[in-house]
Length: 90
Image (cartoon, rainbow, N blue to C red; front, side):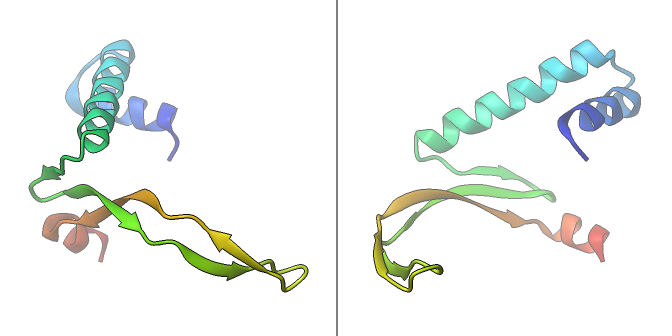
């Protein structure tokens, strides 16, 4: 499902116009992005939680040449599914 299909599904499920559903989705994405960039955790009970973790620097290999390369440390976004979402997928 892409963003346009998600907007269509949200609009039909909630009885909103597509424009209102797009505004709601964009607001959710912006609020979640802002919270994560400030180091906060976003938890949606039953759905899951988004958090930021630091991935340590490490040494990797170039698959074409086999030469060692250094991979810098960086922050990554993690998502852990909630119990209801996990149960619905099974």
